Length: 48
Picture 1 (cartoon, rainbow, N blue to C red):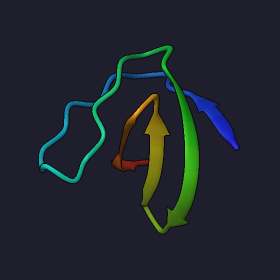
Picture 2 (picture 1 turned 180 degrees about the vertical axis):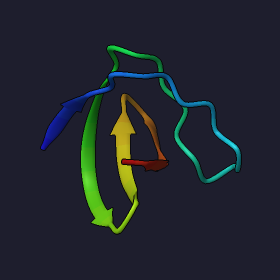
Picture 3 (picture 1 turned 90 degrees about the vertical axis):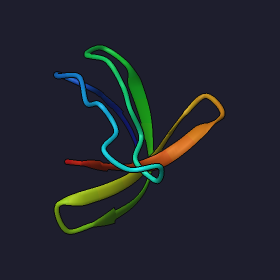
Picture 4 (picture 1 turned 60 degrees about the horizontal axis):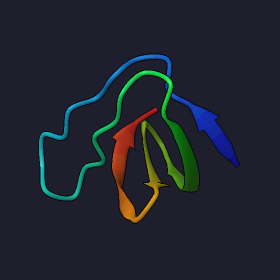
């Protein structure tokens, strides 16, 4: 699934995915409150 971010997120950990509002994120896995996604060649976790 592809989601469009409605708010920015700045990574707090090296495994996190930073993004800006409006970025399109390909969601690879959902795990509770944290999802794993990909933007271009960057992959990481972020709060849903």
